[in-house]
Length: 150
Image 1 (cartoon, rainbow, N blue to C red):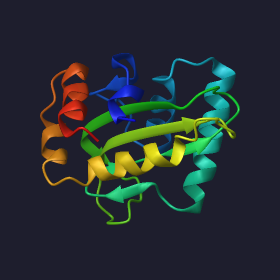
Image 2: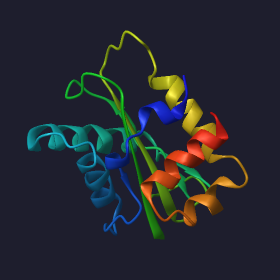
Image 3: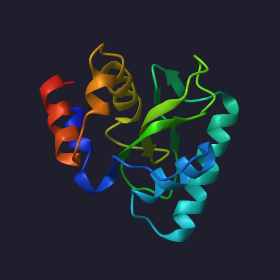
């Protein structure tokens, strides 16, 4: 299993418009191209997850995630906000890179936690934040994932 397999170009935004934590969550959910009702439910689930503790893991990275019945398989999205926003990250610094993970409550393939772990591993590599900052197109993000081979 490789991270690259889960991402598609249309679920990658290198220019998030949002300026608040809630708005970023909504914008990320929008990248999954679900219906309005599903978007609202996912947003609510992600907000609930954030009340347990921020998914901002430090080093300008957040990995908002939840399980929900509105998806029938694991879904991921990536968003970038070069200016950064206050996401209440564990290091109290602004977050620039957002990896959204959503999975159904029961998944046969059981990929939710492994994907979460792989994203954290990828994000923590020393050169990754700088390289994410320099991306010009979604395809370059996918190439970076392939190159890292995580």
